[in-house]
Length: 128
Image (cartoon, rainbow, N blue to C red; front, side, top):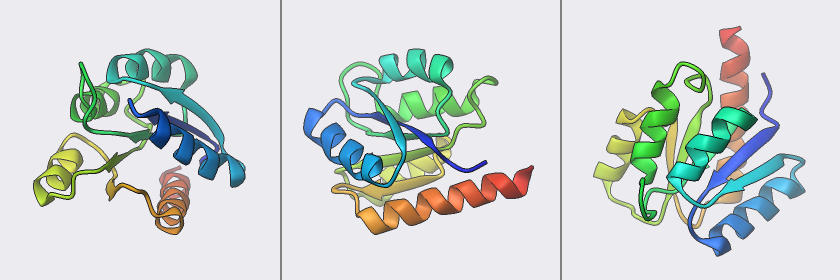
C-alpha cells in the first residue's frame, strides 16, 4: 500500500501549516487534528494511511493517542510517526514502545520525513 492520506495531529497551528504545506506539495492528501482526542475520533472515520503525531498537547498527549491508535484493532494497521520538539532519548524510546514506527525531531527535516514515508509504504507493500 502506498501512502497517500496523512493525518497531522498537533496543537500548534504553525506546525500543522508547515507539515501540511510540505506534504501537499509532494502530492499527499492531508487532514488535520488539533488534539489526541480529535485524532482518535477522526482516524477511525478517515482511516488515513499514516499519522504524524505531536507529543505535547493538552488533554490526551501524543503518547496516549499513539498507543490508542496502534492498539485498537480497527486502526492498528495505520503507522504513526511521532514528531516532537523534545530531543531526549527517553521520548524516542517511549514513542516506539507506544507503537510508533519512528520518532523525528521538530522542525521536521523534509527529506528525512519523505524518505521515512516512502520506506513505510514499501514495508506495507512487503507485508501483503
